[in-house]
Picture 1 (cartoon, rainbow, N blue to C red):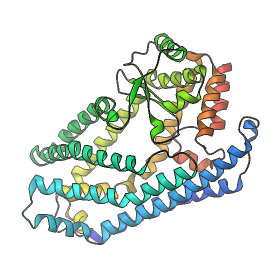
Picture 2 (picture 1 turned 30 degrees about the vertical axis):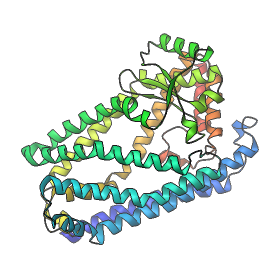
Picture 3 (picture 1 turned 60 degrees about the vertical axis):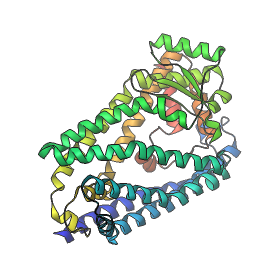
Picture 4 (picture 1 turned 90 degrees about the vertical axis):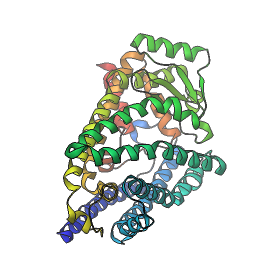
Length: 415
């Protein structure tokens, strides 16, 4: 039976790797062939920008292939080299057991994963992004972010691990329902805490200054009946030249504008971007996605409850006996191979939400041309791919392809 478990995992793992690598290769080949500006964007995107976009797409895609290969190698080594059972024995040897062994085992795995990802992070930030003029982060700021992230992970994650162990160990056969309630409550609490307590540790937030932009955005919020906790500008330019706007929070979110967006867009464009974000809120997209993620969590915990006492699962990867920490480690390392096919479904619903928010923005801001120019500016400033492969975009893109999105805005404006 352990051999069958290993074979099943490897079959799904290879299938995932083949599909995702194959899609990425198709994407790169199309980017390599396609040159120039799509006909519908002629005169709106400079040819030089289109060529830089093509080069950026190729560079990111090749880096993604390397990252994919590295991740696959790390996963296979972790699962089949015997390092996980060795770590289990090494930690339990000094007398660790119970909750302390559970937490120590998972913390060491988390640290190892973070360390193995450092070379890719450094290359992506200081070589790839810097090479195209996007990175503004200094090595000192990068290191400070890593140390802050590590401290926060310990401060928040270790108590969560101890709480999870207690629920799994002491609440009986329905521990997975208790754990689900605990993790769901934690997730909702983090939606509140993230903008209030965590984001200010990494960025400065200042109220949007008085002026035409603030007046326009406040009027738009009042018209939409959108209750919020204020308009803030974030110093995103300290780290990157990419632009964005977002809501942070669940019920009365903060409106956060990147300083790069405020600098580059006119009042109508920024208002259209905000109207789009209000559309997400008014259509309850955040709440829907949260509900879907919680259902997914519940299903995963239910499956885990069935697999937890099954000895062949552990024997397949070298463990002598079932344990809570081994189960979670195997889930984290190998679970993705069995659910990767859900990615295109998530992308599909995300794109549908974007279309809905665009239609809402057209009705609210009554400036479809400004919304189109804002999206075009965001795409060109970020060197978005103008010629994505349709299979790749269907699988991975959380936002519609730019040309299709602009066409949909035109239809919404005339309907």
